[in-house]
Length: 449
Image 1 (tube, one colour):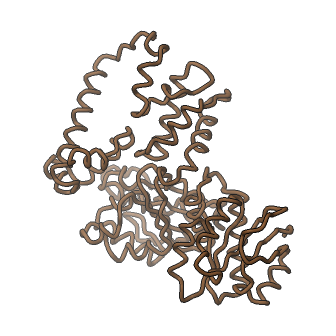
Image 2: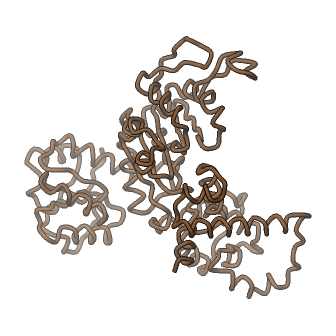
Image 3: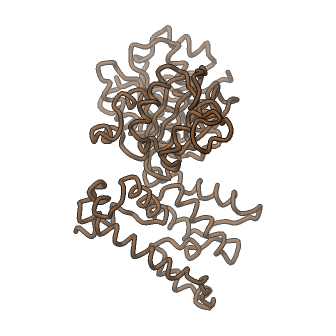
């Protein structure tokens, strides 16, 4: 590898063998006791040992602030493993526990450097996002199942695709199935496939998603919505690594990595009897949690510029400083999906190459939008027949759902029963409301207050 400047803060955490291995790998090492001196050249890697004492976490924060592009690695004693969580929250990219082997240190450093050089198609700048990618990259180097959690719209499918792309299966197929979007009566046939005549309407044989994903990766999105009886069959397929089409007795061997995703807490679903515990533990081998966009503020503007380039049809658009501040201050209850929709809408409304606050049409910018003389002088558009009434009905429906949810303290099952809906239908309706910018939790809280 090319020579990389590595700052070693406290020599105690690196044995002579590891020190020699780092030199042999091409690292140019500089020793110091703290990040206090002026530097001539910014380091590419900083190794910080917890042996430096109470200032350990502060030194990590200092390194993050002064060298945002550096890979910051924490070295922690085995007996202080709880400290690793604090080190990651302080901004460390990864950690190793003493005692460790030289190969382990080199592998973790190598993975971190690869991530710093390229994040694939992922637009990630925040420490929190990069830490998730770090774990995802490590998970991709195995064949184990991965479980991705996170709110709706955070980009769980994008993370699943990243895992597929950087794994050894990257040249194989990537197949995604939204378990909530397929009728329960059809989901089994979609997943496992069927032979001609297997059921009424099966006019010809059809391979299932497992077959199509063989040699690659299968994403089971919104897996919490899978009915319990089908969960048992899925568990058997995962255990036996073979699948059987409906209407057939011929088994097909499988070589598929499973990535499952859910915006629900599956542990809570298990406790509620809505998800099989044995299936949960089969999937929860390498759990990842994708933080909501409001906790990854450094990603907001890069993502906004990314969508501006994607939907700008080759034209050079840019945001005004006020628009950028508005994007940064908004809470994004619909996460990246909402941001993407906002940018598309802004491009439609924009009257120049500069996207202004009024073009964003975010709730916090409604007053400034009405004060915009360009908007005032524009004749109001006439809605298509029935559209105005339809929008009013939808707003009234959303308000009624929120009132009922607040009356039942946010409890989904009781709210669904009161509304005459299934819990699955209610979750779909709430997801639609979030996509339209409604912060459900905050609205319920304000009404309660």
